[in-house]
Length: 96
Image 1 (cartoon, rainbow, N blue to C red):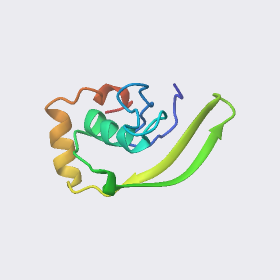
Image 2: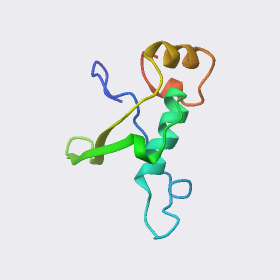
Image 3: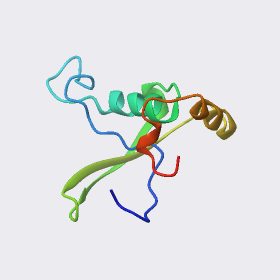
Image 4: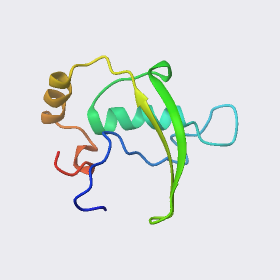
């Protein structure tokens, strides 16, 4: 979408059904992060591993975003090895 620009390891859209909050009517952003970790990097994370840092709006592409990080338990070598075996969303990341 943005040629020549770097991006973060997990860029995941909120799925209206898979990421629904089990208690309320809105989305559960932790579920989105957990699903993104599994689909894009092949890592298993829990809600306790996810830390959200901020909210932003991209005025050029008319998108909102939440940025954060995941305390990952795998090494980079383990993640790269997992990706070479086939991750469902790995082709979403350019240069993967």
